[in-house]
Image (cartoon, rainbow, N blue to C red; front, side):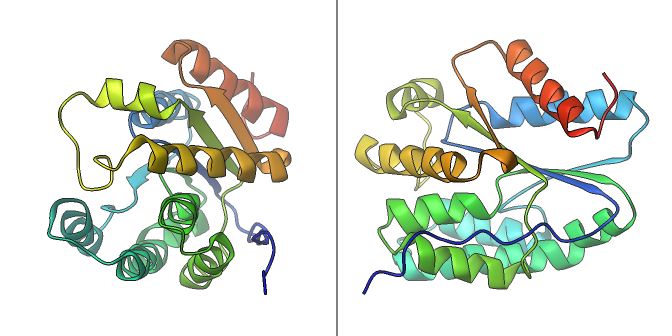
Length: 218
């Protein structure tokens, strides 16, 4: 019996600001993280930039194992990514938010729901629940989805691919469609950007959204 669409946890009360950047491989997330971090620092905010997997020593080991090692079964892959997030949130993200900092992460729980839940066909609801348990229900104040087609992402990546990047375009298209579906289901917490626009225009759109949220000055 189907469990239906994954439910969304509420944003945990805290003093800091939590923003995640999501999207397919090659979309340009890292560029947007860098531009926003500088803009917020210029406005006097303390900013922590991190990524998943790889934001801790354990995360780096998991990243190397899953993305560059031998075959990992789909369920083991989902569990390893959940372990990374649980450790990362406890050691890095929550302490920074409690200190009042801005946390910018290159990927968070939505990547696991899209890549393992939809891409690996493990069930979006099941992977979502696993992720929410791992992070204690902590969800971003804003999730920015930088959207490009599977073909465009492959073109940008060139000839270098990790184990997930090397999957067929059908896999990456399933991932992309799930990101868009999650954003469409909760537009107040998501911002979808056309990744074919210039990095500067995308950055302006992110800042405009934060101004509209009342968390940064124009």
